[in-house]
Length: 525
Image 1 (tube, rainbow, N blue to C red):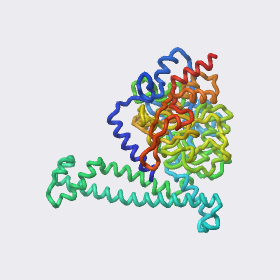
Image 2: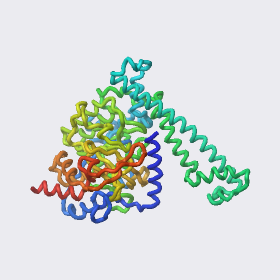
Image 3: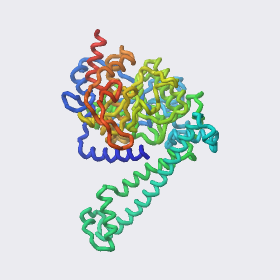
Image 4: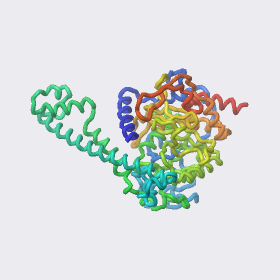
């Protein structure tokens, strides 16, 4: 339940911050001029790039779906000029019919979409159960697969039981809130009673109900919020940790076999486009139009590829999404997703090697578990089975805040002096949501596209630089902060402190202004 409770906390935090902050894209600000730990993209455009010409850069957003008709995004969505829309023909002969704006690898040819899915730990447990169920631990203590089976079984059983119990508790709470509200509505003869009125009740028949309601009103918990948490918990109980639930039949393929990448449909929005729309907005929401946020870059064409359901993505879909992006002209790929297990890692490894050969920069979110990635692996992992780097154009991004000081690292962010390349703003990021909406979101999922936006600026204005050179420039030009900060704590205990420079390979936060200066020096020399 750790990730779920963290999500609830971040939801409440975002709501609170929304009330306090104006909808400014602070992540574009400059650490020196604005005294805010942004990426200095505004300054880069204003001072270094205004007289330079840029080429558009195709950026693949591999995510859960994006609202491509959003008012702040529709002008920056990639268009496959070789495909005639909606004619039912694969005009460009790339294997995908009517892929005008990208592709959806978790749908079928009839237009149906996979929405809910298991976590990977559940799929691994289900896959290994026929072979290992009932086996004696003492006989197989040295067998890695058996130990993996036991690990997954313990986690799935524990989380499923916890979710079921919490769901029951939430149901009781909701029923009691509804009952108390109905009594108090009758008592006050209005639904709009206040907490002070409730606390003023002294009559014994109503005192217990009043104290109950006053407590939850103080905590700002009401029926709509409980319903929201119930929906989250139902996802845990009914889908994520439920071994009886297997939705892959919608696709109609074998997700453990990748001999045919030509499946899915062209619905790049899908049923849950909130996350992907926010990610897309971070990269390239139209700048300086007086509407919503300003994306980091004004030079992107966003190719939308859907692979992430409400649950964990499948390795097969991730691999094919990377290959689709590479084969259809993407120069940068943003991957704001991750998981703790990867049973078909070889599929993704192979795709990463292809991307490496084709000079594509891949930018990946470090994860939101407040863990050290040097110790605990999170997938996709850019290391082969022998610990060697697969793709030297792969950038892992942690999340930072707007504050200078000990709270510079977002409390949820993963980190790693050997495995996380750099940090980028990822807390309280104002961005797009479906149906022309806007909201705040937090996570390394937000930090990754902010970094992608900076990388896009460099690739747009300095197209002669290779992806490897772009990565080197981004790493060398970070904003350094050589002071101690709180290190995120996965167990929720008191966080320790360490120098910020020790929490990533570069030791800093991505900086567009510095990167552009360095790119100018490199190309002119």
